[in-house]
Length: 134
Image (cartoon, rainbow, N blue to C red; front, side, top):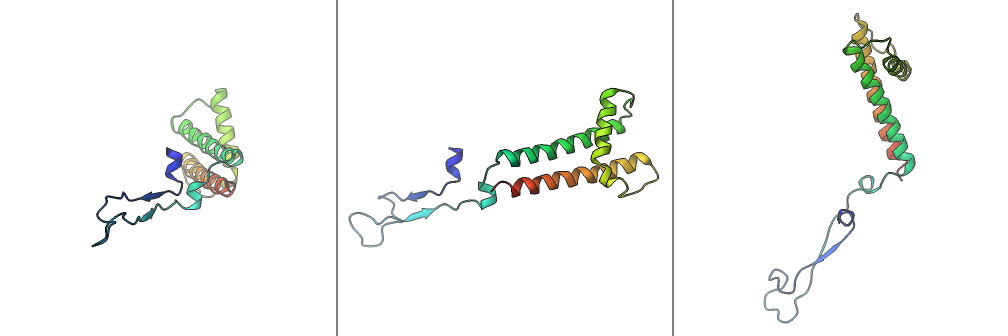
């Protein structure tokens, strides 16, 4: 049923509908056709494997950067292997945005630059996934 919502359908009025029958008409009433508008093209197309992979990679980058910010905010032990690996991956992902903004506090600088990097990666993944959907 969910798939049929987006397909073009024609609805016909019932023969007994008084709005369809004009004044003084007898017998079979003329039928009117109501056309349901389809959503625009970018809403109709579905993800293919390539666009889904691009979108998943964007979400993975955002997740790593967000987790790195959370670990930094919570003062996690950088000697732990998982924390160190997450922060290394986050540093690598945020390296193009390393000194976009400079602050006196290194933590605030990390939060700001990594948040910008996460936003750019998410927007870029959405645009590239949209472009490969057709």
